[in-house]
Every structure is written in C-alpha cells, then in structure tokens.
Image (tube, rainbow, N blue to C red; front, side):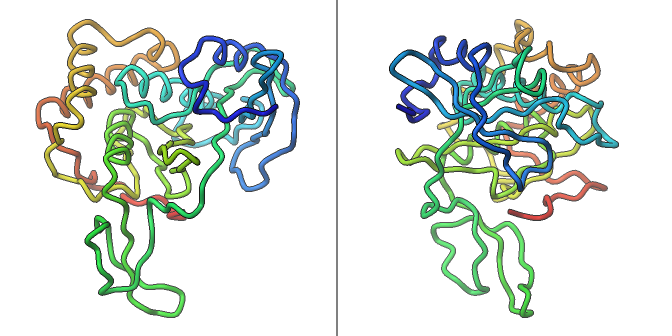
Length: 272
C-alpha cells in the first residue's frame, strides 16, 4: 500500500529508502520549472511511499546560483528545518543514483485544497483571520489584497525562509495535508550569499518573534555557539555559510522578522 507521509516523518527507515531505494517513476510534473519526477519507493514489504525526485540533470541553469546546486539546496533546507526543530519541510535526502542520475528525493505531500494559507481577497474584505501583504488589482481592474493566514505553523515557515534566504516562497509552495499539518516545499533557490528573500509571507515583517518560536531561536543560538551542522554546510559554498551565519546572528540580535531588502523584488512572480 502507498502510505501517507506523516506517519513516517523522522524515521531512519524512510530516509534510507529515499536515499537508496529503487524508484518507480509514475510520471513527470509538467508544471515544474525544473525536471521533476513523481515516484514511489518501498520503505518496507508492507509500505510504499510516494516521493518527488529532482535530478541535477533536470535543472535549468540560473544566472545567480551555481549550476547544478538546486537539489543540494533542497536537502540543506530540510536539514535546517530539522536542526531548528521547525518540522515544516518534508523529509528530503540526496540520492547518488537514480533513474536520471544524482539529485534530491523528497516525500510527496497529498495536499488538501480547501485549507488555503495564502489568498487574494476583494478590497474591504474582513481581514480578521488574515495578515495583509499588499494591495493590487485583478484582471478586471478591481481592487484586491494579497493576504496570508496567521497560523503559527506558517510563522515557522517565515522564520525558515528568513534563515535560508529563500528567493521564491510562492503561495503554491505551501501545502496542508489531511491531518491539517503545514508543509513548505521548493527550496532550490535558497542560501544565496546575497540578500534575496522573496516571499508572500511578509505579514510579520518587522514584528517581534513570539514565544512559540523560542525553541527554534534557542536552536539557532546553539548553532552559532557550537558551529553549524555539517549536514547543512556540506551543500553550500564557504561564502554561503558565512552569509548564513550572518543572517542567523542578525535574527538573534533583533528577534524580529526581517523587512524586504531594498533593490530586490520582495514578492515572487507569479504569486502562486
């Protein structure tokens, strides 16, 4: 049977299967900007798990990121999520071998579409359950507002994005599964040594981090004091590691969510 992801989170058996198990390719995700395959991998004789496989060979070269490193940044993002006790990135590993060569493999999340985390509302709508990001116009010229949920789990994603310098947090990269757990995916353009934070989650910009984030903040402090885990740094350049430490120190110093950087688009496009 094909199992749900959440019952396997954090188990070495799952990570080992993702790393070295035989992948049964189901098909290619046509809407993905890079070559992305949906696969099934056997975790045990009784359980198979659906996963996403992104081979390096399928990556499109980018002008602002070293070629062939996007899959590695996905792995580093998962490791950072785990190191900070955020738990918002599905289990993600590096595969040395695969149907299309080396790349990353990540547990597939079955999304529940009726629990939106990011939305576009008509101007004047009740925002008591939402945080405002920016105003604009729709295709008909009507005034609308981009908003996102106040969910604390989403706030954890915002913290992760600030740490890893995520340059592409679209609304479609945020998923809610059947157990109402929030997941964040697609972190290939993260960890740049230049300020590139681009996200739809600006609702907390400039706000103090709440008590609910004390654990990841403490984990961040411990990493600065003792050194970043090799499970993260092995995928990054020396300059990117220095920049990562600098961002963490800044976040610890201010205890506030960052504001958009000048000279860089604050919102990804398309938004979703």
